[in-house]
Length: 294
Image (cartoon, rainbow, N blue to C red; front, side, top):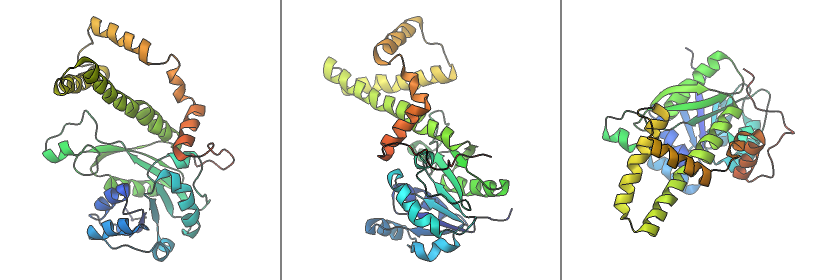
């Protein structure tokens, strides 16, 4: 296959995500330029053995522009850079929020894509210390990626997938969905629900120790083991919950969950949380949608 993305530029290459994906891209055969404004970020790029490029010198020939910058600045950054991109190039962001909210500067002759890592599954079979240590992904533990591509040919999407697989390697599968679907996955499913329950369980652990006097290590041992068995039973049906456990589960739902909690999957609620995350008044509906039509 002809390599469509001959020149790749990473903006924010010295940031947390920028360094993660740059570490992987640097080990590939792709021609990659690393751009970073912050002096401390520039030093991190140099310390990793990579050269810091000036964006003005490389953006004109860039086939794939990766914005590894915080969501809240994606609008301003894209407004500054997208007009300088050549026709037919692709803009790739790493989170769906700004694309969903229509904050990205839009051009009809530029393709838009989003690719977000799923992180290694709790059910992943791990065999090495490196795999066990890689909770985030992108180093040793295999993960999937959820991605959206807004336009272009099948060949372009295939070429983009090749880049995505390197960025987040090792990758087992890239799931191609729409921007809106990706936004329902993150934030709604994995941040509003899953990450919230993660912090809630930590709060419950602290409250257990503080209120009952149970030793910290005993409480941790009980909780960590039951997190695993609860997920295994709920998602893999390894064994049924006992009748007594089901009663306790129902009691927990009655006292902890609101009856109308599923409203978070209404698009109006998705708009609210995206707006809050991006620190804007509301999601823009006065701009052409970046939603995929393919």
